[in-house]
Image 1 (cartoon, rainbow, N blue to C red):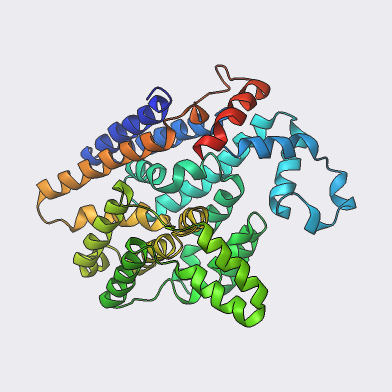
Image 2 (cartoon, helix red, strand yellow; image 1 turned 30 degrees about the vertical axis):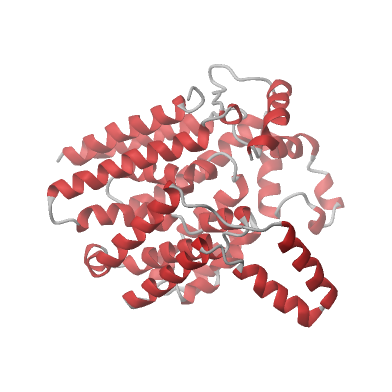
Length: 383
C-alpha cells in the first residue's frame, strides 16, 4: 500500500480539481484549475526518479551513446528510432543529467496531451484521472518513445476529421521517427472516421469476448496455418510452443468486467454518443479497436497490452461523454463515482510494489546503483 500512496494522492487531488471545475461557472477559475492540474502533473512525472521498469534501459543508453557515434553507425544499428535518438543526444549535449532528458520527454508529452484534451474535453482534471487509469500511467513513466509517438498521433486527429491526408500522414511519419508502431495509424485514416452501424460494434465485441473467455489461440492458429504453407518446419516449432503454453489468455478480472460494462454502455447509448459529440465515431471506433486488440491478442499478454495502449484515447473521451448520456442526475453521479473508484483501484493495482516506489528529484532520489539493485532483485518476479 505504501508504494501506491503518492499516485493515489495525485488522483485524489485531481478529483478535487475536477469537482471544483465542474461546480464553478467562472471560466477564469476553470482555466486556472486546468493550469494547476497540468502544472502538478508535470511536477509529478517530469521530476520523477527511477520509477517503474524502462528507466533501467533508457539510462544505460543515455549514458553510453555519444553524438559522434551516430554518423559512424548505420541507422538500422541505432539503439532506438532516429527521432528519439536525436532528441536524447540533444538533451545530453545540454545536460549530462538523465533526469533532464526525462523531464524534457515528460514536458513534450504533456504539451501534446494538453493540446489534445483542450480540443476534445471540457474537464481536464477529470480527463487526466481517466488518462492515468487507462494507460496513461505507463505512458508517463515507461513508454518514453511510444508515448511521444501516440501524443503526436492524437494531434493529427483534427486533420483526419477535416480529411486532410498530407498533414495527417506527415505527423504519422514524424511519430514513426519515435516509435515504429506508429505505422499502424496510417491505414486508420481511411477507417477511424467512418460511422459503422451499432451491429458492427456488437458483433466484434461479442466475438472478442468469446475468444477471450474461451481462450481461443486465434492469432497462433492463423500464424500456424500461414507457416505451414511457407515452411512446414516453422509450423512444428509454433505448434511446440503452443503445447508448452496451454491455457493462454487472461482470467476474468475487474479489468475484464470493466471492459464488459463499458462495451454494454456504448451499445446502449450508441446513438446518443453521436448527439453528444459530432465526431464521436473516431473515439467509438478507437475504443472498439482497443477491445479487439485486447481480446484477440490476449494469448500474448505483452502484445495485447502494448498495442491496445495505442487506442486507449477512446476511453479518455468516451467515458466523459457517457456522463452526459445519462438523463437522470443521480445516474451521472453514480457513474462519476464508478470512474473515481475504478481509477483508484487501477492505480493501486499498478503501483503496489517496490519497483513503483516514487521518488522526486527536487527533494531527494535514490541513486542509480541502489535503485538498480532493487530493480534486479524484484523486477523478474513481478513483471
